[in-house]
Length: 235
View 1: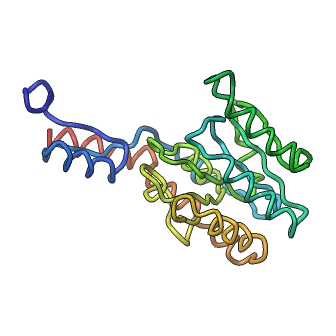
View 2: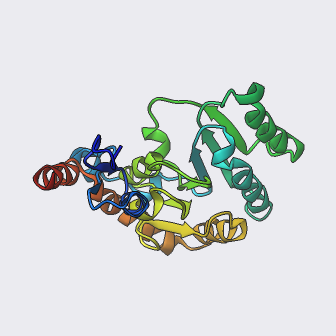
């Protein structure tokens, strides 16, 4: 469509994707504009560390293969052996593919390991404000994402995020080692070590929580509006 003149350019939700699209389709009309924004009131809200439950980790993801929740579940099971207070709550609906195969497989892992008292499938919930503001961290183990909106929502509520560094989103949402941690994709040992550090190092946990909303401010209404304004001038 670009070569035939049916499109004059492309808009992607992250800088990395816009760059990849520019190279792939050989165009200098490839732009980055986020698909969402956070309101200023949320970014200015203060959530004390004391409100967060140490050892309470969350994942916000559909129960589908691409989210690789089996990796997260197995890491939490390993972590729980050394830190009995650890728990994981997974928020997201079950993918119906192949008669809910992924959801059934994940629940089988939990049941077979006797982990159903500290790993819970909470289903889809419309408002996760309380969850984001009481969890110690959100974790993402996907193969890929379009934007990873749940990571931004978490940081907007002051919740640190630990994520595989995958295309697309995490590297632009997380300020690595400041508001959270980026890990090599599929590195379960690195994930274990990062979660362990959060549990044993209160200073690290405090640094992440204090910087989470600052990192999320890159996606405030004003910042996203500026991107649209810049785009309209160039286009």
